[in-house]
Image (cartoon, rainbow, N blue to C red; front, top):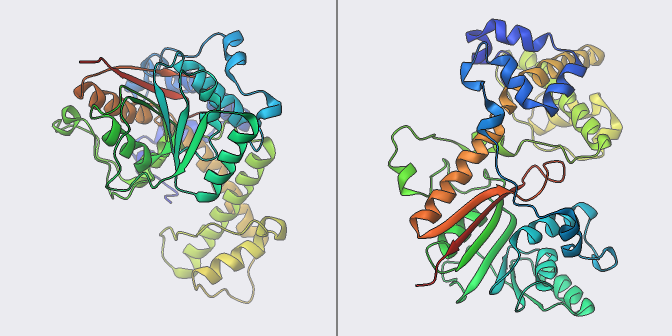
Length: 376
């Protein structure tokens, strides 16, 4: 959006250092953010000790126990391999289970089926999509799992929490996991275990902390949706082919952005919606013509397409280096958001533990917030 961000003008030596990095350097630092943070601390001293500041305990069990919890491959029907491993790791970190379980926003019930084999009673799942509910119940019947999925809008105002039920949510997004925290986390659930995701998927224009302690703090962060999105901008699990295609699409978008700035005589970003996948087979010119049509931007008869593509590639090279700095703030931002949830639950009388349930190579959204409420 900004070819020359404000921070680059404020710290020109820092921007120059980043822009001089090779592609190999970018790959190296992207995988080792703590090394990048230490290198940049000469300009931004607050980045020193970045790795220690975001370190968390692991809540994952030993590998032999983990293997025993995952669904067998032969029974993980309609379940991608990575999702099977994520559900197994999440479930293993929660054992032993002491009560019935409610799987919040359960989809086809992959986590519910995993947990049902290790709990004292069955698992109930809430999901708004009736087709997913039907498919999940069919799978549960097929493999004899004590799972019942129900078609339920979890945002419904009249929804109440089932008595003595442990709430779980693996990668429930934004307002969905915040609704779980409000509904079950005010004392209705004896235990609450969730791995949040997509914090920016919210109806609110600006983020509102849950805990009173943070709400009363005049120095708290004030974040809009775009700023919340930073917490989940990570693609360590994407295949190489997908990452290459994403990079190419970014180059095209940046090339079109430079073109539209010249055509409009206006040096401002013009948002372009998601493009149909077919355009990736048709090339840069086809993409630009599609984008111009969507934005009702007339194109001249003659456009030097190779020139604007080259501009897009140069801009992508610059953006990638600028984003190295921006990405250092992803995990700290996510931890700030989840620590607010932890403080909120403590304010409701829960004992809370926060850690990781798997390696980030399996999923970058590997945080587990596990809260227990002692019986009266």
